[in-house]
Image 1 (tube, helix red, strand yellow):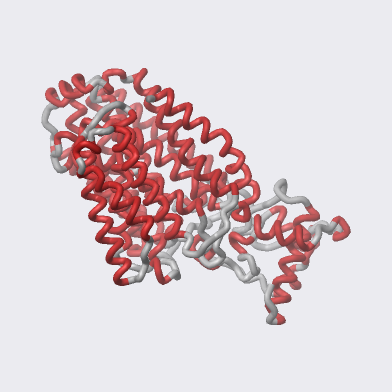
Image 2 (cartoon, rainbow, N blue to C red):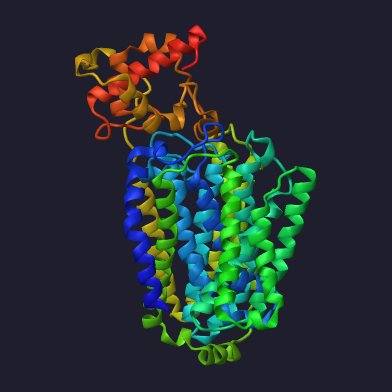
Length: 550
């Protein structure tokens, strides 16, 4: 399985890197995009892959909490798929963000320039929730692996699952709110969180079913879950068709009718059919994300197809490498008989350790709220709830991991590791927030003149504007309010009067060197292109003032 899966992943991944390069270098202009919602395939792929990442938590944590004994047969495969899916999912918002290397600006603490992110933005909610979900999932996987060497660690898995259980529901609730808090009427619904959670679990179960078939195993309960979730999603689809008049028969065909083949015993016995049914489910739910994000028909580019290929290829490669590497480091973890013996030797868990960890998480969440409100009083505590729970869950998970570490190693070693972890966290935070000089006033006397004769054609400037600038300033120069108002607390409207008061030469330097929230584009556009962009921006402002269409 590992070798073939890896080769298949590489075949898809390597060619798709050209699409990734185009997406990073050309920006949103390289993929199909609706100017109404400004969301395209990267966001649809993100929602799909973050849904697949729920597989590990469902099988290894949620079913463990409810005491379902058979879950351990697929838990390890599911946990590895969670880590791989999360890595793929996190990549797509970075493409959509436009400047992936500046991802740390979404961390909800102040930077060296005292700029605080908009903690009410779903973009920030996503970043915090996904980061915490990934970190806690890695800790949970390590706890599973090291329990082979020390059976006493097995007793920590169920308490840890109680932290992961609400977190996984929280994550996809936050993802659903990305849609529900927008101005698009079709996305505004209180049912969205529950709808997204069921869809995520359905796709996650389908992914695990494919992995189980490829590993030459069979777990009949997984097949039963596919049937059960298909009926649950049918209820949502029928309700949408009746109440909102949203109807897509292809979803019904691939997401509901095909899974019903598993009712036929002779068909169900064929492993290829079981895999194809699961693949059909994943395709239907991926397509559901596509039509949800792209409410209108868009002309896809080769970059759209390349990003889809990249997601599948990256997952296959990451999953295969994780499985190969961990099998060499922890061979006993892949032996079911050994793991059964470990579970049999597990000792009892002291509940006070769990409640101490929960208390640490609650304290950390409250402390963060007080800190943030004190430094950015415009954001009241109740509007921080989407980020407060993940912060609390992360601190609770780390605290419980430290208790487990104390049993695995001597107390002195555990304390030393904790101190080193704290030093690393401080050093990493200092590296991210080393900041740059931010000038809120500009000395116009020092601005170098730009020679317009270097010029760029208006058509070239329009294409460059759509690729580099439209993400924030809007295709018509009227600002992409959906994105800007979410991420930047103080957007500025570039009216004709403001542009003329600042001057074209001055604004060219702003494009090249950055200012306040504006990121520098030097090295990505030439001096002539920067001047052409400013001239094009002025033409948009002039057209707007005169009342003509851009």
